[in-house]
Length: 496
Ligand SMILES: Nc1ncnc2c1ncn2[C@@H]1O[C@H](COP(=O)(O)OP(=O)(O)OP(=O)(O)O)[C@@H](O)[C@H]1O
Ligand SMILES: [Mg+2]
Image (cartoon, rainbow, N blue to C red; front, side):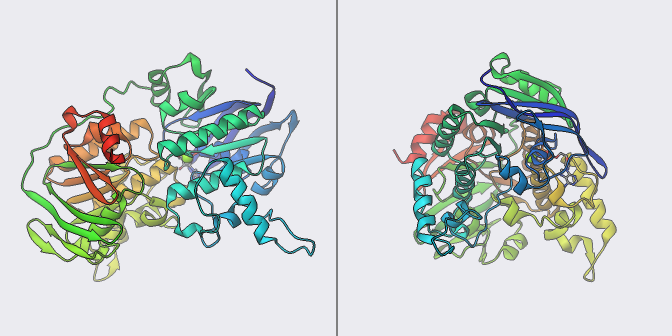
């Protein structure tokens, strides 16, 4: 193992009302290593790093930083001590520019003590160039896609030259090329002796970048090991305490009549003459590169963005879907790719979030019936195994993956029969992924239809009945998943 221990956590406990999030956790971080934290949704990964980064205080235990006991009081204090963190939920100021965000709070000043905005932009250019990232430093964060926002967040932390860098699921929204750039940077930081704590649900990735791994289960450490000493099935077994037989438990449903048809759908510069049909009982996978128009297509069908021309038919009937409300009325449900912003109200409870789009069902003469709301929530908490203390827990205090399940519950409660799932398993642990796939199976077995937008090619191949590949706002190919290789989908997505 390289270098010396820079951080040691001893006997850490963290209790929240009704949950023990961390129970007697020991953890060490060496200089120049990537230490991966692995565990199911709700296992306690984010809680542990939030304690290290000063966002949460520990209930008990000790933290030793470079040999000295440290009592970290706040995120600002952690930064002063050289601990930088990229949280699972993005933390940018959306109205500021990329450059302003990267240097927020440490802006260079001129002789008069006034922020030198030209210097801010120049510095940002250097940071962007060092990572070979093509983002305009003067663009406002609100105008960037989530992948780009995530990169800005990463650049911000890297530019602070920390001794310890913590990354909580940094790659969940990144493309393969972006991930490679990030990994290059991580390797450079390692060489400089930076200790890196890395959380990811992508097991392949862990073998690529990790040196050691600590697996958490229900708030306890089940194992810390060198990466070389374990394989992926060991890790999965440690995480979920059982063998996962099938990673893609696809069951073919009876394919029925047409549920949705899209004809000549066009939105200038974004979508170009899109035509396809979706049958009852079908899972239609849509893949393509970031920016190929997949999410834009979903938004257009769901009435979020207007269209310039084209028609949408639901169950053979033409619908003018000019708002999400209209889409819900037509029987559509849309699970957005950016759940934090569009899918959930973090400050409301689990039950309120679940019943939000289906208020008609739980209200009587406009008065929301708390009882039926609670019943509805309880049912889905059970069905989707949402890890929560109960329907009244605020969504913001759920773990990332469990927040995701709440979004799914919300659309299930709505009794939609055409679902658009945009990256449904992003940020979800391996076992919960299988639960979501099984749920998709159940939905189509009941005659529902699903459009599954995904960048995870194994998932697209493993779970779809048919695959469409988008490229530059067009559908560039249609494939049968039973005899297709990932490479062919990639090529089609690149337009070559
Ligand atoms: N602020 C909070 N208030 C109450 N409970 C919380 C709070 N933060 C986390 N928890 C609970 O602590 C447990 C661990 O959550 P944590 O966010 O650490 O999980 P995680 O391992 O990061 O999961 P994921 O992979 O889903 O992000 C969960 O049961 C969660 O609901
Ligand atoms: Mg987490």
